[in-house]
Length: 234
Image 1 (cartoon, one colour):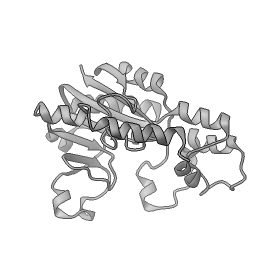
Image 2 (image 1 turned 135 degrees about the horizontal axis):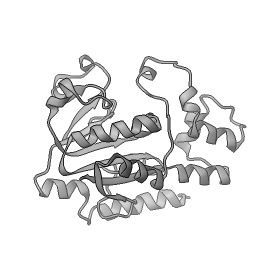
Image 3 (image 1 turned 45 degrees about the vertical axis):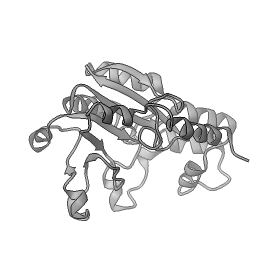
Image 4 (image 1 turned 135 degrees about the vertical axis):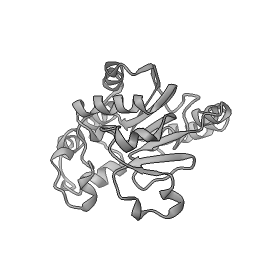
């Protein structure tokens, strides 16, 4: 038996076949210079990439589209990247503190053409609050949380892992040096507030799974927990 969320995701995938998704509209308009920030080792077609890890780890066909750098400091060599039609951050923004987040948004503004799009997905705080109240978390998160928690831990412990304890997690691997800890939580109101506060963006709106612009995984890469917000460079 599928859960309600699984049924919603299935319907959203079907609707995307018939709608004019964000990806389709950008291609139709010839706006095809896209930057994926903090993509890790997930390389989607059509994107250039900005992340921390050394390019020596990449095969040549990917290294040619990869830029090593810090989104907090878009200056020097990163300034030479030029501007983009779309900057995307999928499950990246929550790895910065509230104060750092404002600087990240200002950096994204400098990387966008006028009216270019900023697409951000983060774990939706409201989904996890509801999960806490119902004592029921999605399978992916539950398995991750059990790295630190016993299987019989109460829901409050799981919520604490989501809400803040990422920031205090032990550095148990090389990759954890690169901001793998979560530092902030967002619902739509909080993320829209940050975008407005930056002074860089307009037309801020949430993309639900059923929005005509939505498409898995282009806009929602973790649809069972995503908050997806789209805005444009002012």
